[in-house]
Image (cartoon, rainbow, N blue to C red; front, top):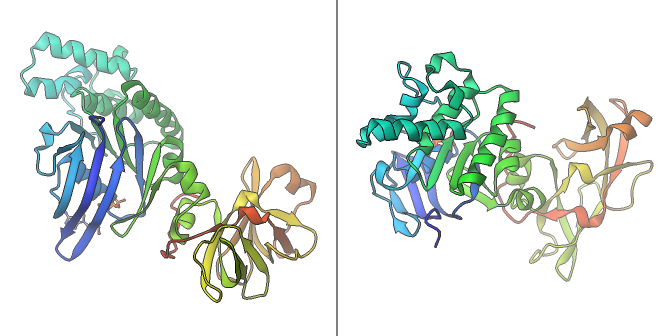
Length: 370
Ligand SMILES: Nc1ncnc2c1ncn2[C@@H]1O[C@H](COP(=O)(O)OP(=O)(O)OP(=O)(O)O)[C@@H](O)[C@H]1O
């Protein structure tokens, strides 16, 4: 068993009547990068704080490296939490900020300064070691906070929205830095984020939460290609969610009929019954605009918005389903024959592109960044 593997078993946290975390089971493999994502208030910070030992679970068990740490003290469980606001001491140099926890532990001055310098080198700030935090940029302050968390040699580093205070440019740079550090150190990183592209870019495992529950925990590719529920498909973005009634079943596949009569093939929809209402998703980038109304596996609708996004163009269609249907097209194809707002457009996809959504969570799950 890896000493930095985390097992969360039946963990709940109640604040009076609020079930912030509701009977959650989760395994985070040792040495992996895990991102927890979900809308505001879904319980991700609470779960992180329980792993760190800053909150006690109301029920359940947390193991780190196979050891029950549910009620272990914060400093004794091998975790380090990097705070959102960095919490640096303004009157101490970077070296002394980073060395602070070693000082509390009674490590001799020369050794703690040497270890702090090594850690500052690791986050590429060795050359600024004697500066004060106020003499640094936001991104640099964040790296000091990282060094300060890492100097305790944690098995698990916990990061609560570590990049949210940075501008877009720095965020992208720090994303690369975090991944590099995690690779170098080989410890478990658990990173709470609001931002889908951040989770997709960094994580080995993405944990999508809603209302105190884990909706899906899987690799970014699995989450993106095989979302569990309409909520995950919508929240992670890049997908259209469609619904209809099962007309017929053959093997593990099914044919679904839209309210307007269009037939959609679902290659894998095990267990569904004729007459059942089902939902499925189709990736926006797997849909083609076609000249004529397709016979199957398509939609038609009026264009309500077009948005140029550099390498592609986003078309939003009103199809009568009550939910926008989005197509992304290569910019060349679009500029070869621009499509205007108000036009009626036909779209189609290969039947293998329809992914049956098993989970029942149909909430809107609006992505905060799309
Ligand atoms: N100390 C507390 N006392 C009472 N309720 C709390 C406390 N901390 C969190 N909550 C509630 O628990 C729920 C989950 O909060 P949590 O901070 O874990 O959410 P979150 O997903 O991290 O949200 P955000 O993205 O906004 O930080 C929310 O409804 C919140 O209001």
